Image (cartoon, rainbow over all chains, first blue to last red; front, side):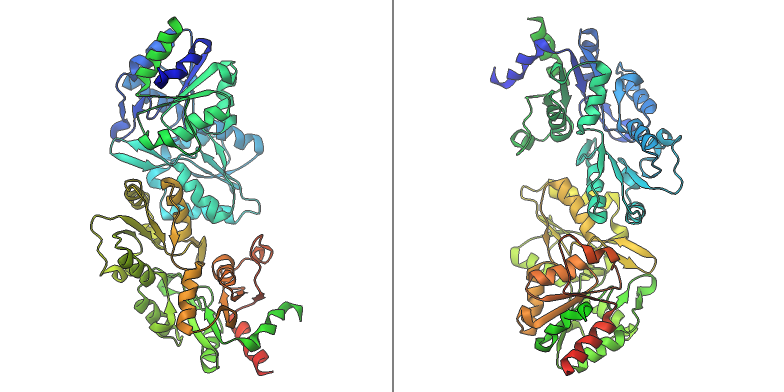
Length: 272
Length: 272
């Protein structure tokens, strides 16, 4: 059926990358709740012959704490399979000898424990949520405007995400704010950066055309993966909105109701 | 001298428009302090044959309170000579039957007393300063994303302004944030909007080429005035930074150390 013509590609697939928030679970009070059918869907993928990785722009916790939360919800996954932006940024800072002023969530701070933060010569922002106060944004701006060559890292560039009590502004909104204030272009670490997706592909040892990305964010998950040469599926959960299916610049290779349906179609079509 | 070749135009001038914050005074704790020489400079302009108006993007007070503050500092000016964005926005809202969700400074709220704010169908932002919390920005975003045709008004689009204790983020930064989050283009009411400058010219009954704008903001004061057909002078006070003099897209007709110097040169050259 036309609705699922993307399934034509699944026989040649060797791996799947899953976005997490909005695909596996909805975030919110108490850490969030699993999306119906997604725990079983992850289990089925793990039992298949497909490689599986998780690629997230989550920056409200260390990788360890984040994975523990998902495990407590019932998901089978391990720290080494999960790729968030913070460890990637910490590595870049060390490599380039940069000392960050951090505007990030308190719970992700430990990822930067071993990074020199004295006399900052760059700014790193993540999804700081309530910490995005006028004062804190102004402090970050003052660091940037005081640098001869301002450097701003943004861990992702999402517009918003869905919590159980509604849509919430994501880090990309504050990235745009600081870019405008300081006349600087941020370096995005996280989806949709091709370099970020490539790190995951390298870890799998696969070529882009052998891998399918599944996410709820049309631009950052689907569009980012497509720019990298992968196929991209959008699930109609999480931050999905019907208007995504008539977006001006990104068209997903397929749209499915949720992860359970996607995995069902993938495995059924591979078995044929 | 080449430094002041802009003075060639002053003989044909019929009016001057002054920006206020950063030209007349520096804002900050306790309302701010006058910039040296500016009280006397305003007095000299008033005593001259030039028409004088004040055009400001100030949105932290009602026009009446704002003018009182300046009068207490020693400036000779009256409410009818001062053009800020809030009364202009209130008029537009009434004209177009729009009901705003307001994210503005508490002290400017009375300007919207007579505007219907129930069941909002647009968002108005001003320089809300500390009120630009994550929660308040998220509330404004939720109104916009819930509208079929989101409408956002921004009272000015400045990047930052100078207070006595340093540079502070201005409303334009949050305009960019909401534009990105909601995929909407804001309607700017205030400088550098040509429509806004035109209101002041209409009040003076003058043509653009007969009027000189003096401000500390290269893009919003000088660039905006130039786009409208006026000459624009930048003062090296307030938010002025030396890099403004090699800006990529806006070049002022002249740069002067402060308002006192500008007025001195204007009056001296007119007398010759």
